[in-house]
Image (cartoon, rainbow, N blue to C red):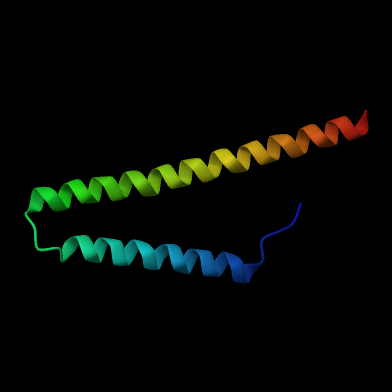
Length: 75
């Protein structure tokens, strides 16, 4: 299994933070009523949460597959 380099980890963290800041800033400065901003914020939070959940599920599935391959190799 390959390890993630520090540079890639840092680039991913910075790009995530920048995207989140720009999205929140865009929603804040949008010339609409407060309830529309609240709706967009809830949608943004749901999108971020579901992205983390999907990434975790994909990682868990890959780890399970790797463990299954190791078990099959030992047989």
